[in-house]
Length: 402
Image 1: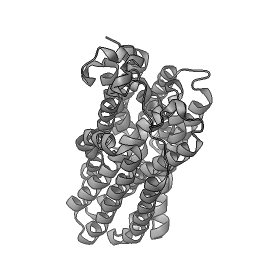
Image 2: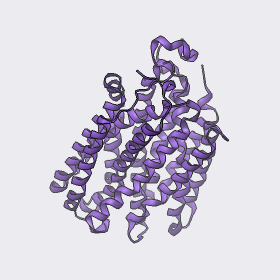
Image 3: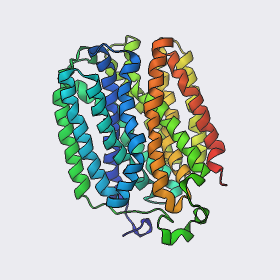
Image 4: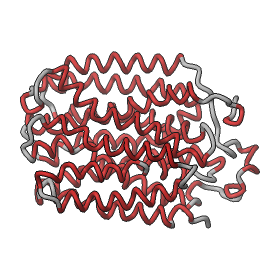
């Protein structure tokens, strides 16, 4: 098996993995369209409509660790191919869900597509992290982030264009055609993932026979003995929650503000995130470290959240771009900082990080219920303490080595 040090050309695998990250973002972006659609079509509350996010991200909690076991058995590439089969099955279930106008069936469909997302994220994130030097991992993750976040607004825009109606005029059965197209595309991506020759990679010390290459992990007997990893898991849990709020609530928030063509506002957050990712590509690690980048974006996140809450309602939606800019380099920075020096526990650490993505199931739903009680604008206050904790992790938490 080839190792990272034996690879001289990473361009081709980076392009392929970039396509996978786009698929992840597109699948998650579908939820931002479904939330306002289901609320109106099924006559349900704000909190209930956000349960589609809960169902999607709950899969990360239940299948994060099993996904790491599957990777250990069949490898990164075959796990990627398997994930697209799960995606396609989940997307297919949206069609009978629409016909039956059944919220439970919609949630089941979201959960199964979330399973596909879990297996794909469990394979592509550690893969791109260790596909090169660890101190430049944030740069590679930033490139992946651009592909991922641009896909979020493309999903609701694609659905809107194929259906040919504004989201407030769409009937549930109108989603059948676009989902047939999505199923075909994702099955095609599964074939590409299976047929493409991607190098299998390993982190330093991931093999037990090479544990001497990672002294910090040498004396450890459990993945639970890495405090910087455990604090990083919590940071990632919070980050995914606040990022999902910034990306997944825009269409719904625009509708709350009675803005025309609400689906067009889905671009606000991705633009802010892409600006941040470009900064990561340019400045990391040549000018700033991954930890320093995390400090900067955490502060931006705090400022952006406060601005969304305090600004006049008509303008507040635009400050979500600043909040999203704060989220931009969190994933690229938190992941490698938490995965540093895990040695043979790399796959186990990766599974914990993937499980932490369940934050996207918890925090946005709290936002949804807050929206129903304090209003959509004030509900964004839930993001402020989250950004403050991530700032702590950037300043101190990632340094803890006991």
